[in-house]
Length: 387
Image (cartoon, rainbow, N blue to C red; front, side, top):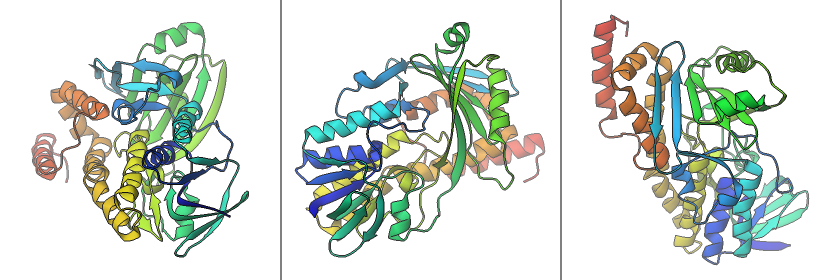
């Protein structure tokens, strides 16, 4: 039976990034992947610059397109904001080649990749025995990087405490005139779906078009209906080919911790997607690095590694998600207040969000609650809205 210091379940951005960081520090590491790479992964494939600049290598070989401008529209209004930067705000990738590139960099540093190994169970103890369809593997630490559904989190005993939202994405081919028209910029259309938005991400020769719902509501929302309406708003009347992909995104972090039984949760398994944009790749990469760094800095001490990981998360991802969750509530549920504020300060807000995409700033924390209270009070009075 093979033994490793760290076993990583899943080869997405968080798992591959963790493997890369561990391999740089001489920690024996295995990635256990249920499929054979490269494998298709449902995702819009928009890598924001703050995630791209974390990676310590050039990703040009897997870039589909780079965008230095982003357009944001607000449904039912004449509001449109365009932000520009001298570095790519959003880089388009296909997740099969992007994920495989990070894995390959880790392999070059000496990690082991076990493909076509689906984890069926784990026997926990001083050493963890991971039972897979390809045989058993033992390790001291486990990093769960197995996505939003995270079977590993369930095996380790976590309950579901994340807010999970639905999204629907289509990879579509359209007539050349439509592609030329829509492939110049990335665009977001706020309120193209209730409590959410639509996106149009141009790739090399097709478009990734989708809709999502960012606030969890009791009523069922027909995303297919809103997707069809969104196509019309984009003036797409002919679709030459279309592949639909439904998926879920956790937009709030787990409330019952991120380490137990020497299992470290990262990426979507932990609930680290941005609560406002649902963008998850950048925090997946970051959390993978943080988990690996915690293990390295602890000198493979279980308790110390867990404490370090929690501290690193609190100083970065968790504070962001907490602030973003409050802002998301107002952004998607208080449209009258939001639109009034955007009409007054829209360009500033669009640039603020772009700065977050670039990794140049974070969501406000200390004064966030105070500002929201004052703003809400002022606008409720102006619009005579009920509290």
